[in-house]
Image (tube, rainbow, N blue to C red):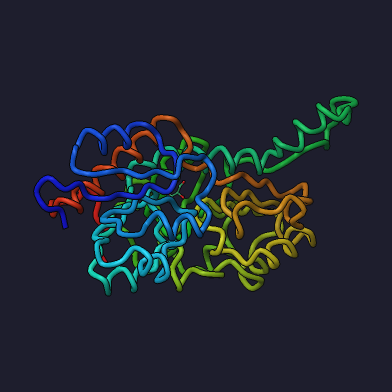
Length: 328
Ligand code: DGY
């Protein structure tokens, strides 16, 4: 750890919004080395950069596993991820080594909820298809049955798998005239009362919903949860939205469900892998809207995430409270 007059070494795996970098330099306790690019740090550079580091500030696209931790060595005392998700961190290995972890919950909930609603509406009302038709000359006339989709108003139910960040989404959907809001998860949540959310078994949620929004985190329990059996219980007119993690969905099964008409449409802000190859079958489907993981992408949210990630890192380095420490 830091000895008087000696700076602690920090490795930052990407160019991040200036808010965080300013905090790190102003603290005057660390020597920051930065992978100075908007593109991910190559694995070999990550393994090099982390050597001897006391702190690591990483992103959700960096896989922090035993190899990285070994490369870092015993100095490493804190990992701060600029994300609310932490499925890219080998938590068991991290815990074993007594390393503290900071993350960025709450501060991106509003931005992600806004994006989720935007994606839901874009998918259900077929906006990308409409824009494409304007550009390619397919717009020949106003036609009664052309580009019809599904509306939220009066829909029987919109459902969230897990109502944690789902609450912010539900609050934004209510004014559209949604009749019922269902949710599933391990336990009922008291805050669901704010939106009259009904806690139901997963099967009920899947079969009764007109729109399904996946907003849960990726855990061994949720990995591959949305699979063939799941899609086969959905209504043919239902729309599926995922803004959590790609691995919650079995993408082959989703492709099958979309191409066979088992479900109406899907909107995905997250995929496996990321980026999704441009020739991936899902990209070829008109009824699948794929976004490049931009849920939290507003200037102000990313600035706040950067600020929080830096303060988490400093808190951990200086044996103080971290503003948002993950309980391991
Ligand atoms: C996160 O922080 O985990 C989100 O997925 C980023 O949008």
